[in-house]
Length: 462
Picture 1: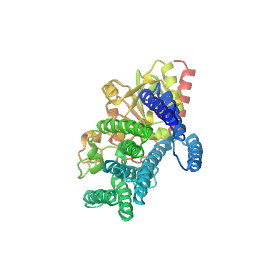
Picture 2: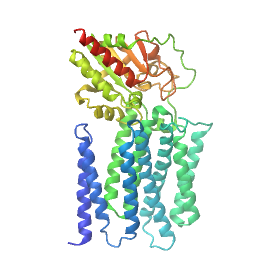
Picture 3: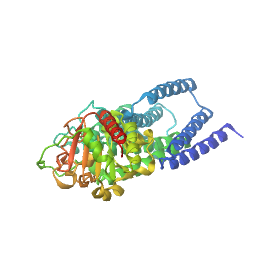
């Protein structure tokens, strides 16, 4: 059996592990093992690549792998759950940048006298490089917005028309680079492609950021698949296609959950514009002791986690609170909005880390009909995903986005640091509703106070 045959068989095994791992990632119960299976597949594919006939620069490859693994192992172990979306955005961007770099190297290689492949292969190299470059710079801008290093939205008159011209210019330069293989055209193509990723992401607001992360993930997968074809590497083709397909499906699901077409995310803003409706009433504070008593003698309680819960690292205390309530016979559920947090599945990861059983977690469509029969809804750090103006104010930036109907609960308690707005930068009408009370303070401190108050009630008898 030749070395090439062994490599191809190894790629087949790796592809099988990718597929099985992706399948297991579909369920929270098996997601951890799915990631491990896919990781083993990637390890097999990487090691097998070193045995390809005629491979060069093995020393540089080893150095790059060692540095990359060391840096990311250290970073991955210490990253806070609140910073996970930023890390995902950056890592995704690196994948797109790698695909763009492959395209650049191949185009330059062909331009200096290497045998030129077919027009179809050249076209895939250019398309993959374009998509990868857009994913790189777009993901970096998404990271900067998520990390608070950049304002959530930059707009100027005629922006979409300007972006369209840049896109057309990038495509035109790509065609010229492909047909002439001239260095000036290759450089112009990559400059415009990188600029396009920045320009596409600048006007996208915070409410759309989970969809954007998912979309750029799909872009990266497609770019890797195209460049895999250019290199003739089956592992890259298969892995890229899987990532691209999964990212595309996830993007569609996320956009559907927000009642937004993909084109609406990229080329327009939420809402219909105009003057937003005034919110009547005032925010009414409440003390932790009163909240604990209200929840202790409730029949049904729904907990709605949001990004503020992640910031405060309060997920373990929330699970302790839940256990105390369940010991008293209270029926407790967690309500998860599809785009709660800063990336797809952010809240699910948070609750899984705390050990919350999966059967206590309900998605938006299942839990919304239950809110009218809910005695107390406890909102912890969530904002835009529970804002009723999404249904009532056509001028609101989030108008049309499906929300958790917390406002329909008999009583709503909101744990919040202060009176600031959410990621979309708008006031929340839920906080001013007659049946809503505000428990001001850090989520971890306030939940700890609720646990202590419940323990005091238990000490005095049920």
